[in-house]
Length: 61
Image (cartoon, rainbow, N blue to C red; front, side, top):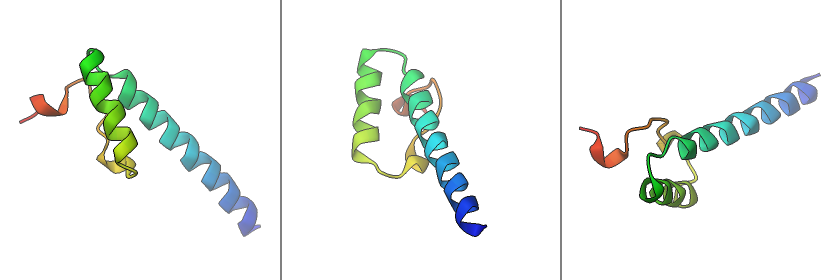
């Protein structure tokens, strides 16, 4: 019973992480921003560091 629940939860989390990464990359405003975001995704394993916004990190206050 708990094994099935753990498998379903794991599948949900993987899907959520993939969706967050794709949303993060898709919200880039230009090619330079996209390259920066790809670099962030490749160098940071922690998805909590990604921000889902159309505003580049350098423009935030």
